[in-house]
Length: 253
Image 1 (tube, rainbow, N blue to C red):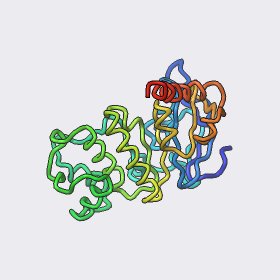
Image 2 (cartoon, rainbow, N blue to C red):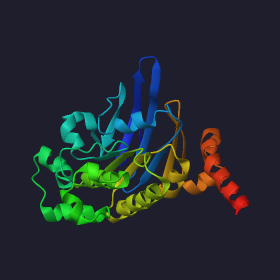
Image 3 (cartoon, helix red, strand yellow):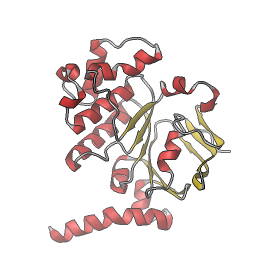
Image 4 (cartoon, helix red, strand yellow):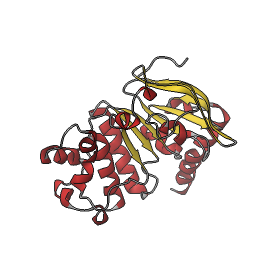
């Protein structure tokens, strides 16, 4: 049984045909934590994340939020309580920025967002309020991703799931948006779980890093511990990339 936490995985497994994508994962995430889930492609990190909002249904085990099984009620109702940001953003191209941000509360029946509330959400993600009337095609990739984050926060959820949220962005935009997400995590007292293939991003943003390999959690460390050599072979293979990049930058300076 996973330890009690705000978010807990209790012996979760998921198979796709012959592939065991998630293999008997049990772990607990405390309220207020910023957790990065890293690993090579095919390690199972995105599959595990999606069991939280039931975009993937596990074959075995349970996922619990504040002790309640996420499978206990309708999946759409669950998803309205969880902020979710992913690489493709998924904005509705035929709707304005304001309409996209207001979509979750409107669909959930919790009410319409006022223009002031939409403006405040745009403030949170550092976008000018005047873009509320624009359509997604008029925005840059970074702006669209910021709108996606504003939409994820519109339901006042305290759990934010992020699946490779910055993967399609240029390095400068990626760094700026990552820093804003980390600040929002603190300001709004969120519990954040972020999937990323970028170990440098995980080390910079997260307070706890989980490394997956072949469907299992093989390391669970703080960024400082990983940089000091902890976590085992799989974790250190991922840390070696930003470490070598930093070394090469140092020698070329």
